[in-house]
Each structure stands twice: as C-alpha cells, then as structure tokens.
Length: 105
Ligand SMILES: [Zn+2]
Image 1 (spheres, rainbow, N blue to C red):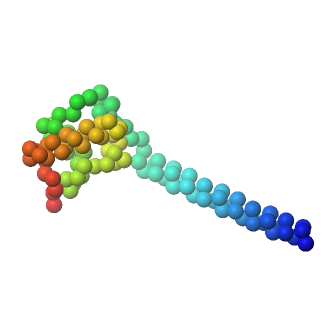
Image 2 (cartoon, helix red, strand yellow):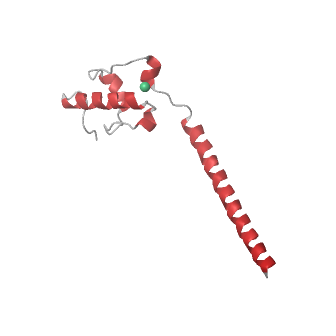
Image 3 (cartoon, rainbow, N blue to C red):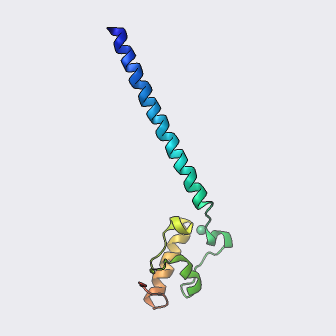
C-alpha cells in the first residue's frame, strides 16, 4: 500500500519535472528566436556620444516617431532610458511649435 503511494508520487513528480523542463525549453527557444529577429540593439546617442538632443532637428526626431506620428518605444528604437526620455521631451517640444505633427493619418 505504502509502496504504491510512493510510486504514484514518483510518477507525478516526474511528470511535473518533465513539464517544467519542456516549458523552460520552449521559453529558451522563443527567447533565441527573439534574439535572432531583433539582433543587437544599441543606443544611437550613446554610440555617437550626443548628450543634448536638439528639438529643432526634425530629421533626427523623425527617426524616433512611428508612421502615425507616435513616439516609438524604447524596445523598438534601442535607446537607453536617459536618451529615450530626452528624445521624448524633444519630440513633445517640437510638436508644440508645430515642427512635428501630433498625429499623421
Ligand atoms: Zn543612450
């Protein structure tokens, strides 16, 4: 009786372990796929050593807005936090003085 119970528990434990292993493998597989797709991202401003972002530099700011006119997220631009904040502020300033539209169709 006791032996049967232990066997049952062992089987259950093994199933659980297998499932965990499979999940982990799946996750790592999707992770590597993401890595392949996005490849390496870098902060443009850190690379070029630009500390101040000019809000009048429209051609630069347009790289960081989507085709709808929204500010592109850090995950798609690859900017670091500091520069993403600066670019967001520059884009907002440029919008106020109508260099960049708030919304494009
Ligand atoms: Zn940066």
